[in-house]
Length: 420
Image (cartoon, rainbow, N blue to C red; front, side, top):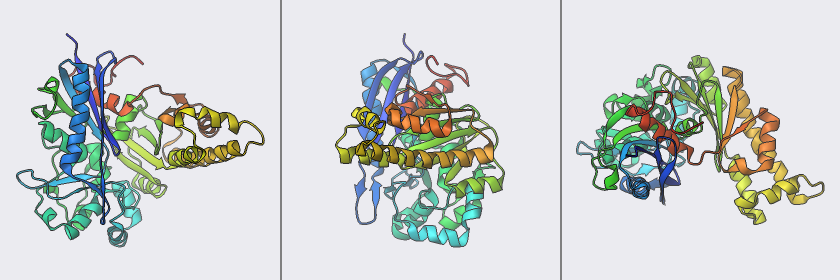
């Protein structure tokens, strides 16, 4: 009988799910859009709609696989949250992590706590991305939110609705701005400032720990009884899926949004964590026990995509622009080369800022759609030195499924699904 493991990646634009055999062979895939509402207040989604997207993707993958699934790992975007009452009824919308409605709260945070203190303890740049400022906004503007008894992160909410325990995984807790990342415990000053409490937070758990099983009848019967685990922040799960999460290894997820993800063995000193935050780099607990994770992001991939759109070039035909970039006198080639160089410079600045604090990366592994561009890869190699290219598709789902297999001891605590 085939033993199958599912990885579910609940993302900003869509939920993606893949069911794998233990040897890494894909048995089924599923995808469903994440449909945000953009209104007067900003960008948000109903918690039920978010859950439905995740369930639809997971069910589609399980139905396509047509075998019982032994375990499910769930990874997700960070920062966004779900507030519920004592009966787990949703009290407020789920605000997008990139929503900018909390500008006033960010200014308040800067005045009350300060960028250096916030950066050194929470491991975050002082900007409107993280949960604590969104939470303070909700308490001010959505009166029902004041009756909340529990706050779930996105991955934790999906696991809970599937039938799992009410828990909060550490790498996702790090994305809130409420966690002292060095101690891996709640930071009371940040909680107090935003109007949150320790009692609002589910128990903290590590990634890859069994947290119940699927009991929901809203998903494919092939999933019934599968052990559930949280696979943490989506960028970290992708690093695991791409086998780029060993100590000192850096994942360059080169998509529409570019993310540099580096795993380190020890949390830097508080002053260095603040220094990283000032450079736009976050520090979080890793999904691997006893490690930490550095993450920096750019919009370089988006700038590259806009050039393709302006030139009427499909991303699958980027080789046309890559070739033009090597031809002297080609205006389109020169513009493409300049945009790619600017994006690579942004990523290189983050890469160097990490090097300055934790030492050079031992390997750089590139994933994402832009790895197919010769010009992009030339620019990266010129700045980072030799880089490896991962052929893994849906690395986040693979990382989540790997943690699902570890959660039931189907593979060892440091093993991966499939062959290297």
